[in-house]
Amino acid sequence: MSTAVSHSRTRQTPAHRPLAYLRLRATLQHAIDAGELVPGQALRGERELAREHGVSRVTVRKAIAGLVADGRLVQRHGAGTFVSERIVKSFSRLTSFSDDLRARGLAPRTKTLAAERGEVTPEEAMALNLSPGARVLRLRRVRYGGDEALAIERSVVPEFALPEGTRVRMSLYETLDRFGLRPRRALQRLRAVAFDAESSRLLGVERGSAGLLIERRGFLDDGRVVEFTQSLYRGDAYDFVAELTSADE
Image 1: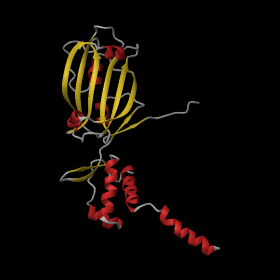
Image 2: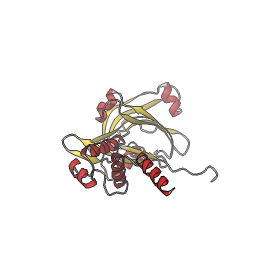
Image 3: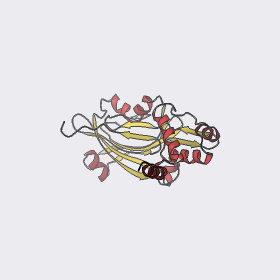
């Protein structure tokens, strides 16, 4: 009986044994999660990794490709493979793009594509709870972490919050804060999108790449809506997290 059981286990083991590239992928991912490989760090070459882990270079290449697809690694032509400098953005705290980057020690930068004032559109009036004819400031900007484009933002702000002549140079929230009008709470909606030709060009990613669209309505303490922002984030650069509690608490 023991022989039969042993033989049965021998036959089943290969079916349950992870493939070599999956084991290596898991090992590398654990090293990233544990901080043994830090954001921006270059990965060792294929030959060295193959020798260290006792696998073929094809296996190494396949494991790396999986982590690149997950956004954990990034490959730069002619430079090598690096740990992605992913940004963790919490849905539980109301922070700006600049806040998030500075918290990671990165330098935020902004390129303004358009800044114009005009009458509110029906869609904007509904989002901002404004009457027809009200005036707003519209901003369309590319947001950078250092030299890397990370997001495209389109913001609409009522003119009462940012009067004529006010310029938003970097952070919209910091500018609103100067007038004591920084949002105190917000409603957000997130959905997955694929980058079109223009968005992919602005962000330096392939057309059809995965992105995350967040629509945010920011409110003041008195209930007025002070911003309506649509942010298109690179899916390979961001992780969005939220702390959840039981409905019974």
